Every structure is written in C-alpha cells, then in structure tokens.
Length: 329
Image (cartoon, rainbow, N blue to C red; front, side, top):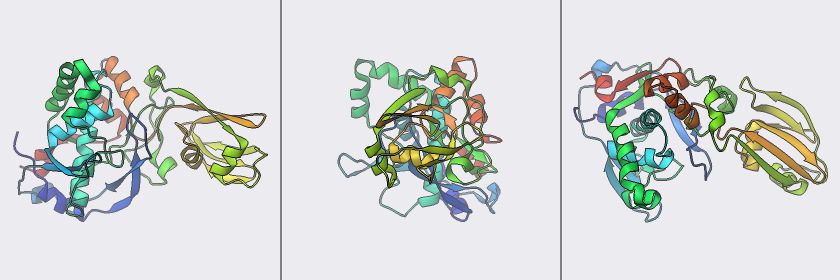
C-alpha cells in the first residue's frame, strides 16, 4: 500500500467547519471523558490532494513526560490492545482499529503543529501502551494476543471511516443499554452519523448493570443541593434510548449527563431508589452511549457480522475508505 498522506489532509480539514468538542470513552473507563473536534463539511475536493508523506505519530508518554514517535499502524495496534479486550472477536477488533485510525487521522489533520506532540497516551485522547506495558498486561499470552490484534490492524491497514469525504468522529464506548444514544441528546450537537440504533447484544457484557450507593450528604455535596437531609425526585424525562434526559432533585433541574458525571455513574440510564439516609442508583450500560458499543460490536461479530457491517451499523451513512482513496491517488 502506498505511504500514507497527511499534509494534504491537514490542509483540507484545517478549513472545515468545526463543531464544539465531543467526547469518547474507552473500554476501560478509568478517567474523565476526552474531547474530539468534529469536521463535517469541506470545500476542497479529493482531486486537490496530491502530495504524499509517511505518517509518524508523536505520543506524549505520561510515565516519562517524553515524546515517543511511532508509525500510524503500530500506534493503532497498540491503541486497540489498550482499548479493547484481545479476547474479543477478530471482526470487533477490526472495527475498533478503524475507529482508532480514524480518530488519529482526524486529529492530525485538525491540530497538526499546535504542540510538540500529537496525542497523549491517556484517555484524554486514546489509551496507548508500549510493548513493555503490553507484555506486562498479556503476560505469557503476549505473543498470541498481540498477534491477533496485529492481524486485525494489518487486514484493515489504511482504512478510515468517512462521512461526505471527511473522517468522522468515531465515538465509542463500552456497553449500551440496548440502544445507542443520539449525539444531540448527550452533547447537544446534531451529528448525522451518530444517531440512536438498536444494540441488543450488550446484555452479555459483565458491566451491563451496576449499582452505586451514596449517602444523602454525599449526594448533596456532589450535586450542590441545599438540603443534605432531603432527596426528592420529580419530573423525570428520558431520551429516545431510555437514558435520563432531565430530572428534578429537590426542585433543582439536572440533565442525566450532569448527574452521571458528578456522581461518577457508569451510565445516564439509571433508576433511583431512596433508602433511609442512602440512595441507590442502578445503572444500565457503561459509557456515554454515543457511537459504537464495544460489547455490541463483539456481539455482532459473534453472530457472523463482519467489521464493515459493525461500523456501518453504529455509524450511519458512512463510507469506509483508505487514506489513499481520499487523496485521490
């Protein structure tokens, strides 16, 4: 395959219309959501993209505060290994590879030259583990596990997900509640390819359901309630995917996203049950719910769907293209 070309894509997407920052959550949710910039339209045609350059990713390592350079496909393989269990079906790993590669191409195009590095290795961008870290993670199974991921990445080499000729915001998360969420219901931004779809495979996820218990005092502190001895819920509304849209607590209005983030709940699909001086929150799903469900992807793969089916189910009306094809070469 020809060497990847980024310089021209940077020019192309630097002039695109930008929407406010959006959010993606990885499989292993150990920190806050991370932001993505979202180009939607472009005034430059693919025929204008004629220059070429090999892609090198500069990763700021959180453990050393040093920048590590790695080629795009190696970067994608290490991200997939960090973001999705290697035990998942190969077609799910391929879908994750497309999401990771699309994210990186979009980011390089939008923010090239703004910093000494392109991405961090944390959930601020995408989790990246080097070989030593992966060997520690996989132990004696390193060779077999990494080879499986490497094959998924190699099979999809250079492929990204586009909408109207531009790389998409390939949002993903761990586990749905049976449906994904509309982007505008979580981020208040209408993204045409990030609309709610059914995802019935997620019930197999070990994090499909969860409970968090807080004291009234803890809830009052976290939500900024005036009365720490009262918990009265009213006027609950839900989105089309059954996640909390808004609710009133002690007369104050909160969005489901606000409650989820302030209480560190796994999902904004939750039920509330006051019990004395405690409140039980029972959640369904894990993550913001927008884009590709990782456990849903694995479920689809186990039912015979390939990675293209998976990608085009969770991202509507998109096209899978290679970087070379976008460049018109």
